Amino acid sequence: MTAPRYSVIRGGALLDHRAHRTVATDILIEGDTVRELGPPGLAAPEEAVAVEAAGSMLIPGLVNSHTHGHGCLSKGRGDRWSLELLLNAGPWVNGGRGTEDKYLATLLNAAEMLRRGCTAAYDLTWEFPGPSVEGLSAVARAYADIGMRALVAPMMADTSFYEAVPGLLESLPKALRDAARGLRPGAAGETLATCRRLLRDWPYPRETIGFALAPTIPLLCSEEFLVGCRELAAEHGAAIHTHMAESKIQALAGLERYGQTLTGYFEALGLINERFTAAHGVWLDDDDMRRLADRGASVAANPGSNLRLGSGLPALRAMLDHGINVGIGSDGSTSSDNQNMFEAARLASFVSRVASHDVGRWLATHETFELATAGGARAMGLAEAIGRIAPGYKADIVFLDLKDFAYLPMNDPVNQLIHSDDGSSVHRVMIGGRIVFDDGAFTTIDLEKLIGEVRAAMDRLNDVTRAQKALTQKLEGLVAQYCSCFAGRGYHVARMACGPGEPGAEG
Image 1 (tube, helix red, strand yellow):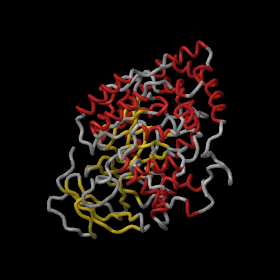
Image 2 (cartoon, one colour):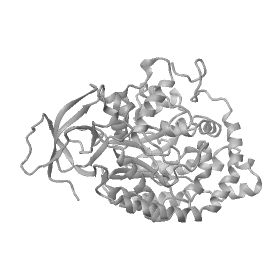
Image 3 (cartoon, rainbow, N blue to C red):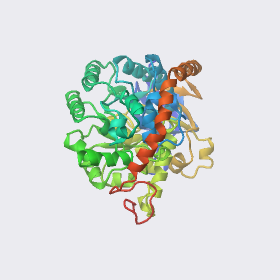
Image 4 (cartoon, rainbow, N blue to C red):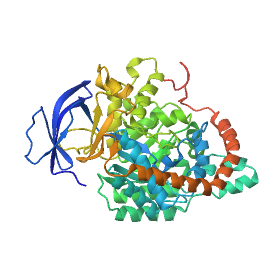
């Protein structure tokens, strides 16, 4: 099903987030693009399909600047897991996947995002021992089938997690050390060759489903491999996305290994530019932020997973003060347990408020909304196409039911969208002029069929990953103890819930 040649949305209340108000507006759409905004009764071609929006607030589709589609099959797997314990569990919770499993995980992830008003996502997907043409094609097909925009970026590494934390591998008993060595990812050359082929032959338009590179964590990538990523990205004009200074352990290990921060190291290698996105950035210092801002890079903030994994509180106001483009992400469901961009935006607003007693440094709700829309669009390289409802932009429009409890009574539409709405108000979603979710039902996929297939897949995967689960559990206590001690070292910024006067406390 394609978008009609012309459609016109009538009777809706368009959100003006900067003015904290709604305006009665009709929207004329030609194909997949907004052509005109106007007062009720806006002239439209005779053949235009009318879309009734009475009682709805209209907002641009939310943009998830950092998710992991593969993680949707692993939600709720762990409780008191730090980032490092999550990485330790990766071979278990993501193991045993075939091509169809990768498709199902991505489709489920996309459906959950779409149901909560997200129309575009930057998806860092994972395969072991490395990316494959078949697996990444399946991921892209899932987004194409549901009708959602995506930037697909395979997470890549040529070093294991156990080698990335200084001294961790050596601290393990010999039998477990040997087992951990067996979890090393594939060779850098093979990984880069696969990505080169995909960049050359990628069949989708950039503005619908694009392809990017994700050297997953700096410490998991050799310098040779990172240089290879840089050259490949430059050759094809591709974006690069990495997990940058997500945890204190990563920040400390970066200083120990490179003699400088991770951001400084990436800058020295020439990886940071306007197509670069640093996920999380919890432990960035002021100099790191200046480096990112000076080169037009973005940060994808993920406050939900940062809280869930105990990684710390991102300094969002400081990032904005330095001029960094900031988007908001849900992260993967293994580390934040849902794909709800309303919740992610709410948490972004809230974490800014425990970083300073100066209320002027807290994120205002209209700023938070901007990060969840235009900020994410820019991180995806789509700043001129999505993230706004305006002439020339794609018709990615979310209809919110103003009878939802979040808006009763209506006092301030932006404050209530960010702080009251949990996404339950979403009753219709349009992407590129095509309605893909309407009145509680998807129009592009069979949800009941997907649920059945996911349940069957999990029965099989739980069986085939028993050995990986057992290894994870044997390693978990040792990894936790070692990493806890390692994280106890001093660092020149503090991003945990520190008190007034402690290093790194904002305000």
